[in-house]
Length: 425
Image (cartoon, rainbow, N blue to C red; front, side):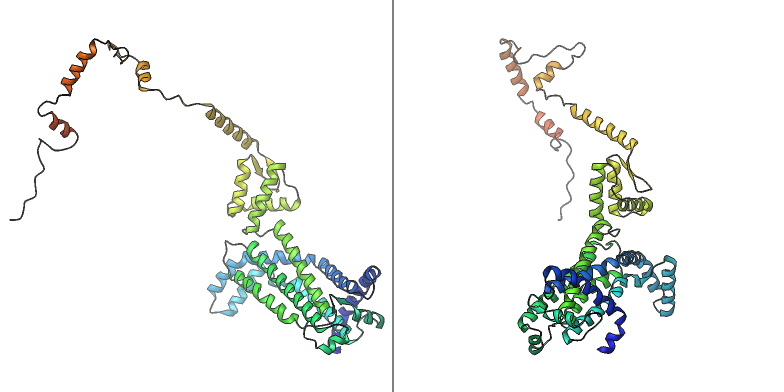
């Protein structure tokens, strides 16, 4: 252990110094020997490290998206040179060089955190074994050994025996319960972070092996944290749980404000952007202008969400510019006003009321030389019997008239019959 600690001495000394400085601040508030002072010192160390790693995180996002864009080309190369691995690797490196993509960039934040993680592990392990590491002297070492987080010492592990735990002034049950809860939270936060990336911020229009790899990591990483977590001291679990929560929050912010093109997060973002633009008449930040600028530059290569966004802006009289700004389009506004005027004019038109048969006959134009017919109200009473008699005569069917009437209705009676098919004799 001393050999390993000496190899990491270039980083253990700065890490221990940072922890001591934070401990002075929190010790003056909560007391130097409390778990709050030492626990918050570790949390503050995590936040400081992650703030310093933000540029690498941004580079990781760009590299991951570039890799997603290159997946179709990489798949073609794999299929073309599937029997020649050397040529396949050569073509892959050539593709990376042409596009300026580095596949290792997506691992930069994890690789950059590794030295700090090992340094903190050795510092806390030195506290557990009573060894001085870095700038931690005997007084600080004794104070750290007394610090407990919910009854579990900072240097205790899930696998420690009862004798070692009692030497640190705690019970084995408290240590097992606290470490088990922290391991579960650490694995759950890692799983949720990876699932959030897969379900919301992945281009669903392209099915590539990269997506399958990410889906596999979503289940592998939590299991790895659970397996290795039982061998981590409580202080290291605090460190790793804090960094997982930071990563989850950082990723939520990126997915909400700078989503991957073609993902569900982009569709939700463009919907929010459309509502804001139609309400205020402009884009509100530099990042929004950059996204609109990228959409305009794509032209016909836009995905469904981007086309829907541009068409929705056009319908309400806005136009997206090449510089990312959104302005009111006079031509669209005039067309919109004309359409609304026509719609209102059509709405004002009313359909004529339905007239009865007698009203239509009375208002119908009279033909030249035609005598107007009498309605029932205008008909003289003395003519009604004779008219009734005449109607009765007309109603009496004449011989052959029934056949003619039925023939007119399409039935063959009295006329030529369809020839019957010859019967079998």
